[in-house]
Amino acid sequence: MGRYIGPQCRLCRAEGRKLFLKGEKCQSAKCPIALKRPLPGKGLNARTKKPSNYAIQLREKQKLKRIYGMSETQFRRFFSMAEKMAGKTGDNLVTLLECRLDTVVYRMHFASSRKQARQIIDHGHVLVNGKKVNIPSYLVKEGDKIEIKEKSKKALLFKENLKEYTRSGVMPWLEVDPDNLSGLVKLIPQRSDVVDLADIKEQLIVELYSK
Image (tube, rainbow, N blue to C red; front, side):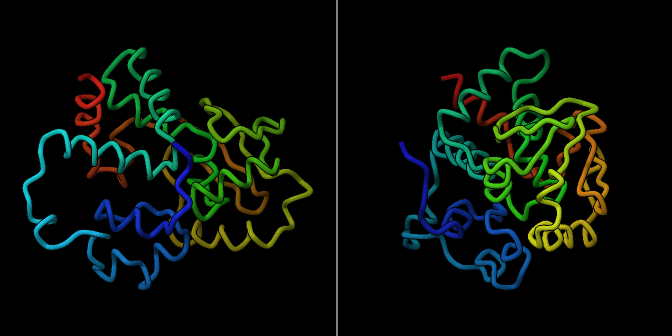
């Protein structure tokens, strides 16, 4: 199945929460979730019908997959990696997703969304420990230095995106030097650290894939 190319805000409406797919618009009063727009393509009867356990598990998986902008194949691969790690599979899955380079670039506010972060990485603007990495799914490690390459630092895009850093700061496991467009992965995040995903019930995803 190909990548979804339809309206991004429709995905947020389908999941009933902000997925932060549109950058600045998601923070504005124009966000359809803030405007309490209805679910797409569904009537009142469909919205009030009690969902099955499978439907609840599927929605939770779709929600997390869409937040990180991944295909089913990519998401399933990360789930398999999480299963092989020590500890809870659900916690491991969230940690792995947070360690993706596109997520880290987004969390450092070098990009306004994960989609934009993937484009920035694809185009070769990002260095990891001084070396160009153009793979969005690359997994960062504790102590890795992430920076925008020197030739790209003058781009207005990065200065605009860093305004969000001024407003909201950065996740506690990361450190950002906005003047030099660089950052440091201080720690590998734990599940409890990812507070903006507090409503995600990853155990339902584990149950879905365990069938």
